Image 1 (tube, helix red, strand yellow):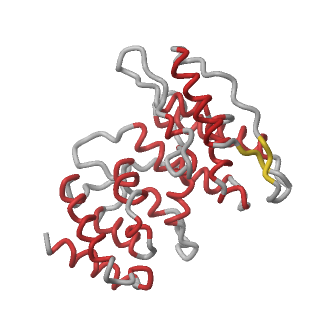
Image 2: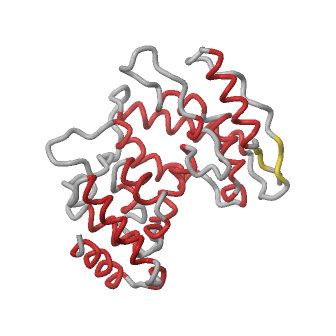
Length: 261
């Protein structure tokens, strides 16, 4: 069955028209999607609409605009003494929701599917998530939240892949445990943009090393320190097959790199 797609070029032109219009709160109508030929029989518009409703309700709960979320939402491992930021809390839980909600399908491997989701059914949530609140009149969200050549920076793909990277079917208590760790910068700067930290179980070891006190506890390293650690890990990974390390070896690898700093 076909699934909806929008190309990067089409989406970028749509975004530029929005930015040039000066109408921050009123994006232009979404471009008409094309159809990819692969995939199973899913009603993607309905699935996406229901997903956005659920994610919108989640944002209400972490933003204090709705009833309490039935499950406590992780703060994403903020430094001790600092209140969790709304967007950190939202993404720590939203990644789990989107991964559970979407059916496994070839569409999930297609960047243009994720561009469609961002430009079409997800535009209002992205606009709210990146509203620029407190900075004057707000601004149009950066185009990377909607589109790029590989869609890796689009909001909904980032959420889905965060949960997919860390999903552990052998964790009977919570297969998404590690997806709930870490703030937004941790994931964007130190995981998604660093291929060496995407290898499992190295990713698991890296997360647990930085968050020894759980998802809501104090982190081990400062931002500057963790940037240095990632540099050392990236260099060492050129000489080590990190993808074949077991859990113990992966943690030892991380600890050894930290001792070099």
